[in-house]
Length: 251
Length: 200
Image (cartoon, rainbow over all chains, first blue to last red; front, side, top):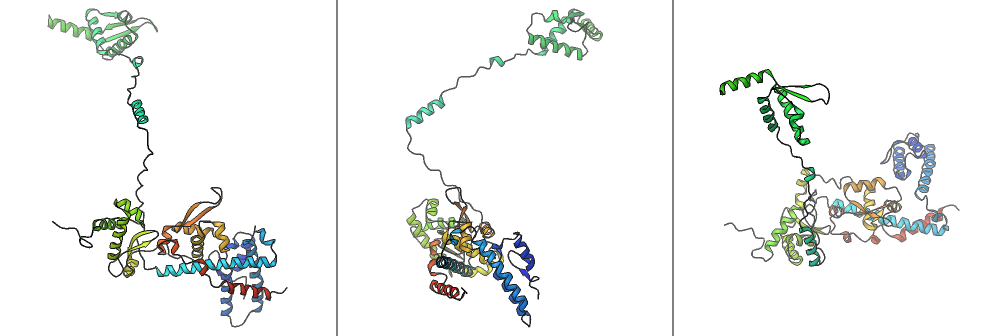
């Protein structure tokens, strides 16, 4: 029977014993998490399954487990330099004290386990039903005068902010359409600059839009000899005919 | 006109008792007398009287719903009689498969808490990180500040759910730690015997 191939199934480790040793030595498995008593139990069980006592295996196992226990003990007390400074009697007393404490905790855990077993038939509602938030605490006594002052500040009407500088007044495009049509009713052609002279910049821009509108509708033709040269506006042939027809009907 | 069901005819706290019944049936955690008094808008003393009435009405053997005093408050639970039926329909995930290590850790936190992981590890003699994380996940313990005012390790305490699962009225219902774990003199004696046997 080989100790190294002893198959373990512990909480923190599952696999052969020699793998566990390797991992422990490489510090890949924290020894503190390993239940050494569990390993001993598995070994004893395997041993019991065999008819004869394998002394070699037992010896080897004892050495390995003893080493493992020593490592674990050192690991658990690492950093507790105070223990090393103690006299043997004091150390024994300290150990006894700790073991006693641990036994009490173990006893408490057993009590809890029994209690849990006794409470197995208690069913109750568990679930998310958070309590409504409690009402906010009332404020400390306040001075009514201070409140009135604050209210007055809030109640005062704010001065109106002037937006006049942002205001732009656009005359309607239709106004210039009418005007240009009237001019073209009297004359074949006219100079745009001449017609809009004396108007504001905005009005001139709207007048230009009206001109483009007339051009799009095919009512006028536009000419300009060069950039920034005067724009000449002329009535188109159809318009002339329409106007003639209109004049004839109304005559 | 239909008259409301009366627990005890013409009792002065009858209407309050009905309100408490409603509050307890809606709640998913135990409600203290103060909680109940505030919600019902009544006096604590009258709430206690009304709880007495309800306790008599909702008790084992008389009703499928039992009123119990647990985890610092009052709560409804199923009667033990109905446990088997409840078990067929519901699980008890909080306490399912609580390991020995988990119970020991719970014992340390319940008796010594609030305490940090290193402290628990010192008591138990093994690393407790995963056990503590598991108990937090189950809601049996919760964080309760840090050691040395904010800079140290996180401390843990048991939750009201712990008290409820273990059926404890409060942590004061735990047995005294001194009485647990057997005779300390006997332990010392055994240690001394061991020490004497050790070759010098």
